[in-house]
Image (cartoon, rainbow, N blue to C red; front, side, top):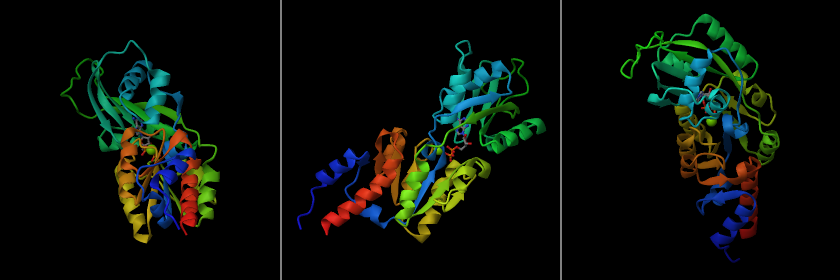
Length: 298
Ligand code: ADP
Ligand code: MG
């Protein structure tokens, strides 16, 4: 039989929404035993919306000013809902894996998930904690917003002492319409399907309930995703699918990294193939293409 030129299989793949960065990809796809999906932005659309907030307006506007500099879908939702032209300039900024921190005018502001507040030693009053639990239990993301207690013009860039959470923004995200059909196609190929998320189990309940999901690992911090992938590799080759907000290390740790087309350039760099047009079904198409190219070669 005549070997196919790399060009033709690569072109055929592109016609089906799959961009391949490396000629060995089809061969490596055939060996994959486990496919790991990041949740937010991958199984969900990543288009989030702020649903409610119990935080003072001026603090929300300052939080949105910081979130302008973040790439997480939750950040975009907060900018859309609470961005305000009349906010003082950002004087200091730190991006964390689970939120943002900085000085806006005379206030030091922290925005992110409850774990980030704990890590930074910021206080979460009981009422805020309870509200965050309620938000989670209704299937949404609680984003805490806090500032240093002062709020009296005494805060400056060098003042990085802990503050306190003032309230919670509930952010909602929708699952992609084709997520379950895509996972089902993978299951039919005998692949194990794993969902990884930084959120807790209640936020991942919809996925955990599906017969097409074999395992859900919840509350995996962004830095722990690569480690989770390495552990899964102990039982066979792993493909990791991510949107790239903070998934690049996990994509790189997998035998095969798959990025969704809407993801950041960084994710594309860490991946071996990309699904273009932001179409999750392209992940299953990649496995179909791999099987077809194998049959053709025989
Ligand atoms: P997932 O694993 O579901 O994709 P991520 O690892 O992307 O979740 O994020 C972990 C957590 O950090 C989530 O609860 C997310 O909402 C939160 N987070 C990350 N970046 C920000 C940000 N800029 N603002 C608010 N919350 C954030
Ligand atoms: Mg993510």
